[in-house]
Amino acid sequence: KAGVTQTPRYLIKTRGQQVTLSCSPISGHRSVSWYQQTPGQGLQFLFEYFSETQRNKGNFPGRFSGRQFSNSRSEMNVSTLELGDSALYLCASSFGGTGFSYEQYFGPGTRLTVT
Amino acid sequence: KQEVTQIPAALSVPEGENLVLNCSFTDSAIYNLQWFRQDPGKGLTSLLLIQSSQREQTSGRLNASLDKSSGRSTLYIAASQPGDSATYLCAVKGEGTSGSRLTFGEGTQLTVNP
Image 1 (cartoon, rainbow over the protein chains, first blue to last red):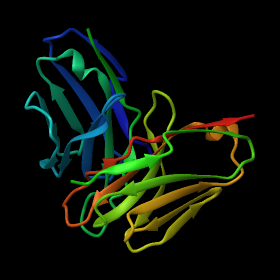
Image 2: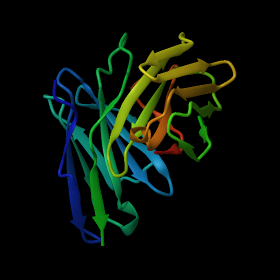
Image 3: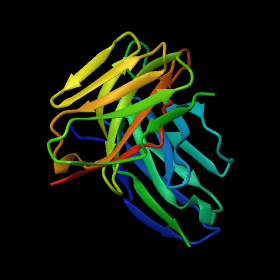
């Protein structure tokens, strides 16, 4: 069974631009969560989508948004990029439904550098 | 607000040593606890998942225990190898919260010297 895939793996953007990251979950998983990882803040939860609906949201500004498609693939968008958005963005998938273990499986991440 | 702490922040040991990594959490109302491994610049690999009703889980040379009431978990690595060198993260999912949101510790950076 294929694991969680993320594209692109590396991205360099200029301050003020916007960026879209993509995540394909493990087949059969309906929940996709996004996390930001930086050396100073560690792993911070951005949001979670389940069955095309945002189920949880972390404490990030509105510039960070996401969506999920009917095939469970998810995209994350960051508008008006700031230097501080430079980070490793990780997505995780799980079955996500009641009665399941909620075990999370992570993708390889997208390394975003904002200059 | 749940807070997760991992001690020590870094650990260097000679090959073959048995070692223990510690994780503590402030709110004992957890649904489960998961241990991950992260190699530099890479994603997270799930090592062990312990449900709140369980006391421990084992996989190969790894054994994780959970004491929910005291807010602690330990990851025991037997007969460490250089290939075990990585950052180890623990994360908890809150009880009573819908969804898959995890709260992570800062990690323990492990170096196993040949």
